Amino acid sequence: MATSKKRQTHKAKTGRIMITIPDGLLDMVDKAAQEDYTTRSDVIRMAILWYLRPQGRDLAQADPDTILKTLQHRKARVGIKKMLED
Image (tube, rainbow, N blue to C red; front, side):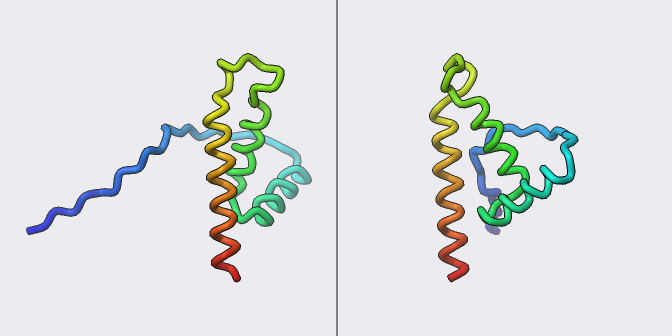
């Protein structure tokens, strides 16, 4: 009898937050997410990473490798989604 194994992923632990932003800004976030074939959370996550970028900040506060990997992952996802759409 074969046992099924769950696929292991190497995702970082995540937390959930609640923020309040004006409706107009939320509309802009949603539009950006739709245009980039991503989610509202991804857009907000990228904005936070951009804010924490190492330029003018202590490098210990933001890991440049993490930012680069996130940007590369997002670019790859957009490319795949566009390819599937065509």
